[in-house]
Amino acid sequence: MLRIDRSIYDKIVAHARRDHPDEACGVVAGPEGSDRPERFIEMVNAERSPTFYRFDSVEQLKVWREMDDCDEEPVVIYHSHTATEAYPSRTDISYASEPGAHYVLVSTRDPEEEEFRSYRILDDEVTEEPVEIVDPA
Picture (cartoon, rainbow, N blue to C red):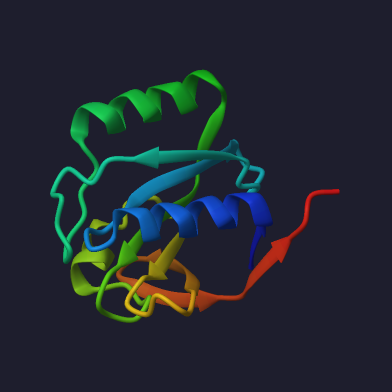
């Protein structure tokens, strides 16, 4: 199960809507081994595409080094789909390289409705998991 603060949930959805019609992407870092998404990191879709995303390699190296320096790891890796449901594509599955991460997809195909789903992707196997949105105490 992915437990995520409402403020981070809102930032992910806002980023996805703002970048529409292109796919948005980013990471939520958390303390190593904690499974707690705490630090929202909006990233640039280097492809600037409505059907594909790729982290900019220079930005990704910087972000991953920063996480290492802070004893953090990518707890959530997110991106949006602009015209399809929030389900990982074959390309998304092939690029899933963080076995401990929650892969979040947000569909922006319907401007009136949020579709926010989370998956674990391990060895090309996709497993959807429940999402619990929590309000900070």
